[in-house]
Image (tube, rainbow, N blue to C red; front, side, top):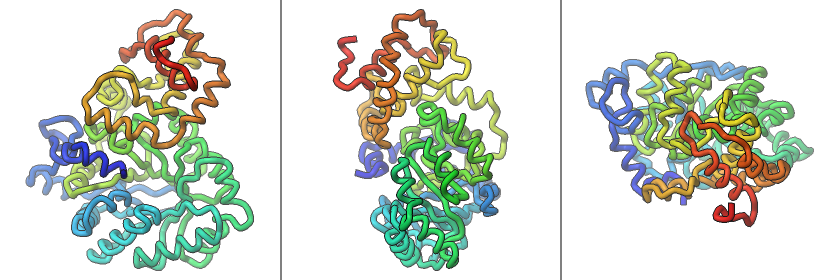
Length: 418
């Protein structure tokens, strides 16, 4: 079951489409999704989406991008409406992939773009590792989209050194990408991954000019290397930064405005989101039309108030005061985040929210890597439990969380025995 289909089935997409408006100044839950009131919508649409240069590609992309996965879950009629309104709002970055529904997303988007005669920056992706497979995928994508050129073409989900080696090897997909660029079938090479440390090595070995990387406050807590290491390394090479998953696969559906404002504060060139309706598009666009700078105070307030983080998710504070071994403590909770995104807090919660977290917690298959890294540390959680621990400023019960993290990261361990 696809993630947005799942969210809809448990009633969360309906809640997202019917909640209070995210327009600045509206009364209601902060960041909730709904169609804005007509007068407010008209005023907001008078201001088009800002644009930024996508690194060394030189392309000027709108701050809000249109992601292609969601076309699998909605009719062609709704896709047409969303694309038409997106282009009318000043949006110009449209991204899809061959394996979103085995070409269904590309087919729907191609029809919608032709219907409104839109000129956009168009991107697609292939998970192929060989030259022959990548060449086939590219030509099939061009045919489905009804175009003879893609502005960006992605090495899709390269998440291990073995996969990167395959791309770069003789007969690897890189050869097809280079041929496609020489023949003007693509403009720029790009990369997506579900293992953030891969971006730095891939940028060293592949001639990529843009990346698609997670950009949300939940996964920045789980992967602190993204803001600390990966993004600075990409900026140093002037590689374009496209944020994906600004709502953490729907987990942050109650916090649309805070989630987008947090993502905006990290300095991406474009934030790519999916829209199951025109109402979702309008609420996201309204937030990103607001050019008010995001301050450190606002970012801190977002992290403090985030209902999804609550009193369980470690924020990876640079100045943690819980214990003298703060680096070890933060590393334990980071590995817990890589294991299950810190979603399983072993507490009773709303049935729909519980079902959503259980669906999403293993989305990136990082559990084995996290356990292997934890095993190299010789059970630090148990060592920390024997140390003096001071209160966490976010109200996290550190001792309880250490016991839970240790149980998750230690195969065969049961939390009741700790």
